[in-house]
Image (cartoon, rainbow, N blue to C red; front, side):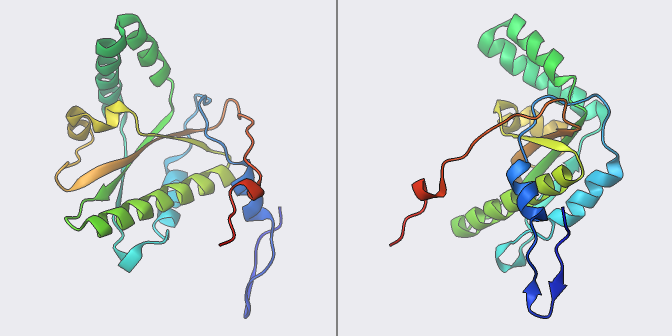
Length: 194
C-alpha cells in the first residue's frame, strides 16, 4: 500500500485508506496475545481527531484492567444465566474469558437532544477511526453493545457515572485468529439521485 501524501492542493490519490476500509472486518475470535498498550493509546490519540460538532469532544475511553474485565464477565454471565440458563452462562463465561483486550467508549450526556445526537455520532466516528487505525496495524476489533453495557452493575464496574456518560461501545480487540469474509450491496442499490 502506498501512503497518502499532502500537497498544496490537498490530499493526493492513494489506495491505502481505501484498502483499510474495504478489508476491515468485525473480529469474533482472537489470538491470545494482547496487543501492546502503547498501540491502543496511539489509536485513541488518533481517534480524538474524529469529527465532532462544535468541537465538543464528548468521548471518554476506559482501558479495562484484568480485575475489571473479570467483573464484567461475571456480570454478563449472570445476565445470560438468568435469561437462558446456567449452561448458556457458562459457555458465555468461557468465551468472554478468551478476549485479550477490552476498551469502553462513552459519550458525555447532554440535556439538549440535538447535541446528544450529534455527540453520539461523533463518538461513533471516534470508534470507527480507532478501529481503522488498529486494523492498519494488524489488530481487529469487535464493537458490542449487548445487554451488559446497559446494566447498572457494568457502569459501577468500569467507574462510569451513568448520569454524566452513556456507553457507546464495549470494544474487544486483539490479533485476529480468523478474518470473516463479507460482501456489501452494490452502490446502485443505496444511492438515490434526487
